[in-house]
Image 1 (cartoon, rainbow, N blue to C red):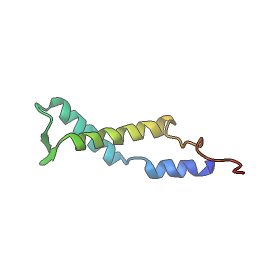
Image 2: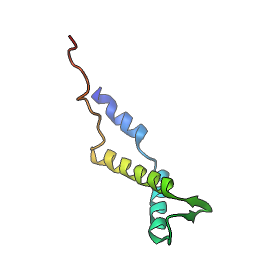
Image 3: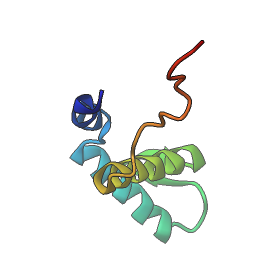
Length: 79
């Protein structure tokens, strides 16, 4: 139901801490000399960079209103 969308968006939105972490990962990647580097004593590689990108994309999609739910697959009158 449309009235549930704001609650769903709130539940699925990344936290400020997750977004800050993602920004730090991507900033460190930009200055790294290779595809694998350390941040806060932890190894960062392609899957972690992908996660950081996904977190920020999800936040952007929710904030821009482009994080919707498809309804085209719903059968209205199955007979």
